[in-house]
Length: 252
Image (cartoon, rainbow, N blue to C red; front, side, top):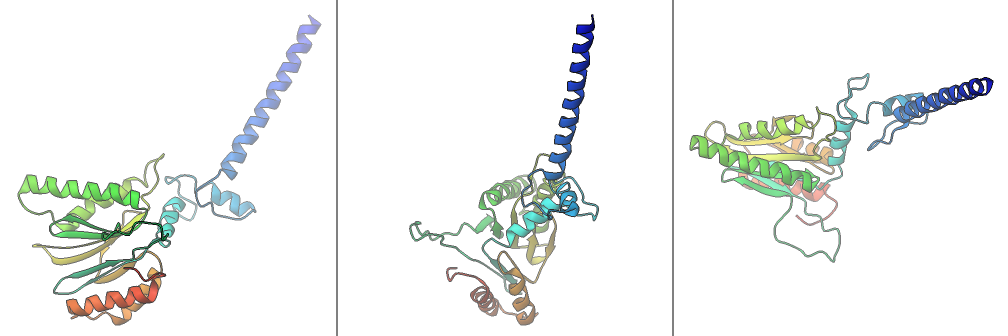
């Protein structure tokens, strides 16, 4: 009987030790879990910050969504794209990076897409992510045409795409789309339009804007050189000027 009591006591002690170790591991993983683009230093502040950037659905105490911010920062490492609107039309241009001399050079650009007869777009970010949203945009445009027998309004199409992008920041197990868009086109509602959207799902209309690498410097040039009555020819010259001064390579 005493042997059984001793054995039971020993097992009970080991069980408590195991629970303590398991609890410690859970707490440590919560504090030090590996995150994409982890933020913070080695101190307590760094540990606390990492607790809020492991998922897109967790707000930090400052009200920030770190994973969405990381996706936006990733756009800054992508090839540049610039758009300028005039009363005569819209100019879109994008940097075409050649990462190796062994790559087959194509005439088409993976950063410029035609959505419908009246809508085109330029992208900056992860091309594979962009392809998913581009296909959705094209399908939505054709469904609208089939249903209403008229081209889809540009702003409405952008709302559909941005709703999808925003949804990927709101549910666990998903990551934000790592891509920003410049949508350009014309419709009978508002004429020529230029929109910019980011990974958070936010979008807005612009007269001239830039996304991708060195976008801050590009925005500065656009702000100083853009004129309200700019012609399409001058808009083209402005886009070339912006890209030639800000991009790292010389291929458009």
